[in-house]
Image 1 (tube, protein in one colour):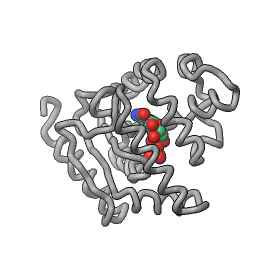
Image 2 (cartoon, helix red, strand yellow):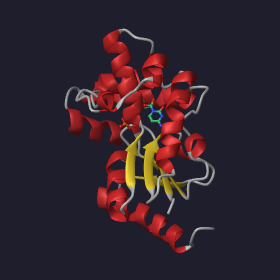
Image 3 (cartoon, helix red, strand yellow):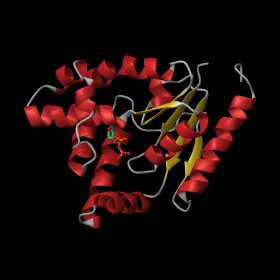
Amino acid sequence: MQFTVAIDGPAAAGKGTLSRAVAEKFGFAHLDTGSLYRAVGVKAEAEGRDPITVAQTLCSEDLARDDLRTLEAGQAASKVAVIAEVRHALLQFQRDFARRDGGAVLDGRDIGTVICPQAEVKLFVTASAEVRAHRRWLELGGDEAQVLAEVRARDDRDMNRADAPLRPAEDAVQIDTSDMSIEAAVAAACEVIAARIAQGPQG
Ligand code: CDP
């Protein structure tokens, strides 16, 4: 059975937690596509290499680095993510993952719009910049005002790039998690997915 759930949204909107919970609930595989861009950005910066070559030769060890979740890695990711050749190098891997047998959840910025426009379910998860920065600050610590500035800088870069900018697909269901518990957000997402599964393969 092939069934793709595309979960897009801005930085720290809760896509990661939501995606993992949904994947577990339905027994689907999960791919955090941001980790691909983080790995390219961090490796290219650390080794002073061309991000396009790094993206073309990315391997599983690069994805297992323990420094991918930092604020710096997020910024490095969003800088290499504007390069069309980097996005192109990562595209087929994501598409193959999405159509694997048994169902897949992919979270990112352009899953519903570019990677999997035919996804059975598309969710767009948002929250206010302040709420998102607060969540990221709880996760990483540091100076909350700086975390907010970084979130805004990344939003700006992700939404205004020429190639695959962050935006909801026309047929995406939007979930604003600003005033929602994670349990409520998971329940809302599961309801949309269960309804789509109940419609059967043709939808
Ligand atoms: O976890 P968080 O929401 O903070 O970010 P992420 O999903 O790990 O993504 C890091 C960066 O990678 C984003 O700010 C985007 O610039 C880029 N990205 C992208 O361009 N396309 C994707 N499908 C996923 C991430």
